[in-house]
Image (cartoon, rainbow, N blue to C red; front, side):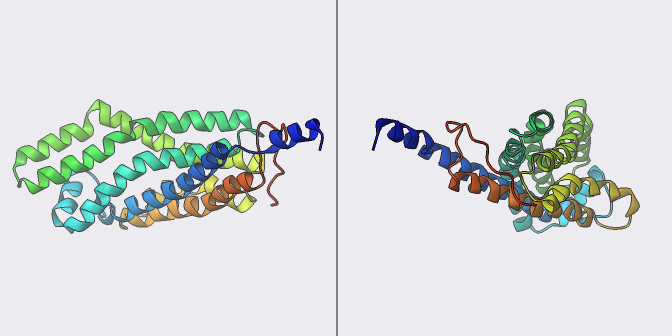
Length: 247
């Protein structure tokens, strides 16, 4: 076997670290969606038909402590995993739709970086509820939830989790990185949140699940595509572009 052939085979071999990267991001895509669904299901205020600090305190007061602990665990997990899940899906579209994927990544970063405040918000609410019914606690929560920093965080979170997946779905569709049906679910899933005003008498859990479940389903082909790239030995060293997923 000639030295040229040996060099060619070595150039086509994908380093183990690259395979680990693909597996890591594929797992993050799945776990990010799972953690977010678990966060939604275990969030006590979503089971109330009312909004606001008073409703939040009431639901935390009557909710099962095990449910609240599960929620606090999942919300911390989602803060780490959900941004990685969205960024990994956007990265899949980067080669064939670089501008749209880059904008999606920017939106996700701007929207998700402040999300670390939400576990603290939930933990503070739970701690104050356990300390009693002092009216001062309600004032503290109202001031904390309505101040400028938390108001900014809430707006940015909506931007990151509504506009971000929409742009990611569009980028994946243009890049033909996932089947069309998956790209459609990712693009329009979270936009179903705008149905909230049309169901004022229903607990928020229904609309939340209606908006997150399509994103979860659509993300599964993205995770598979990430692994498929690994199995096919796709590498930047080869200079070859992966074949588009069949639609």
